[in-house]
Length: 338
Ligand SMILES: NC(=O)c1ccc[n+]([C@@H]2O[C@H](COP(=O)([O-])OP(=O)(O)OC[C@H]3O[C@@H](n4cnc5c(N)ncnc54)[C@H](OP(=O)(O)O)[C@@H]3O)[C@@H](O)[C@H]2O)c1
Image (tube, rainbow, N blue to C red; front, side, top):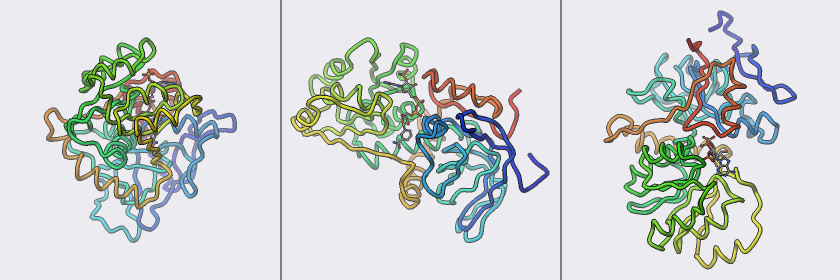
């Protein structure tokens, strides 16, 4: 922490996309905002794109990377309505600014840290869990006993989605790119998994559902999976596209195949949503899911792949770029790792 109350350390991106820790002005809690002294943030794929200049923050958001943070309340801005207490432990969904010692955030996007979780575990929660919750409940409207195919089953969002599907009494099935990732997804609760690099996942999905197909697909892959996705889908199924790790283009009879299945293609982005929408998502998640980090049997758990000091941010990014992580990569901001 700095004695100078107007500056802070933050990870900054230079013109070539290189990341460096620098001193920059500290934000202030404006109307309706809380100032959080950040303990940790977590990496997201959006950070990898943003540093390359291809995914700029929405207008009005911080230019600093970081879509989530955990820490303690350091200041309460004018016009804040909730009963927040200085020093209490919180986590928040951010439009940007998490890779820094302080971040100011609308109070509606701040959540208390469930008591069994450390601040490092809490940093793994907001973006992955709110995205998975939104996809399942706001977009796909999952119902008990439905089968949900989750691609990248060992990813940050995948490991959250498996647990949320189980919590909804539906059946999670996954794809992943290695036996280790598949084993982990199954430990998290996946009913079955398939290595998409070695086998045709649509055949396995049809076998698993006795020819019916899966009711919902959570798809962060897009282009390279489109045809197998439609083959895997049940009649009237919902295919939720929320990423394009496998490319943006789809050649072939996509519309014809989708129509024959009466499939619903639903697309979702969280970062560009309105404050009102995100506030409703955070409120619903806080009521419906946060208590289950304490009381469910087994309790929900954020999955941490690895933790890095702020100075080692480049190393942390390389791990995600190489698809090595299972769960979330944490960046410690407030305290040095031993
Ligand atoms: N729409 C939204 O609101 C929203 C919000 C947050 C994140 N996202 C997107 O969601 C995706 C997942 O995010 P995350 O943080 O959970 O990611 P993550 O933890 O970094 O995991 C992503 C995994 O996807 C798999 N993958 C990468 N390229 C692939 C390809 N070409 N084909 C198939 N699988 C591939 C890799 O695992 P394997 O080893 O198993 O291949 C990789 O480890 C990202 O694309 C991110 O941008 C969208």
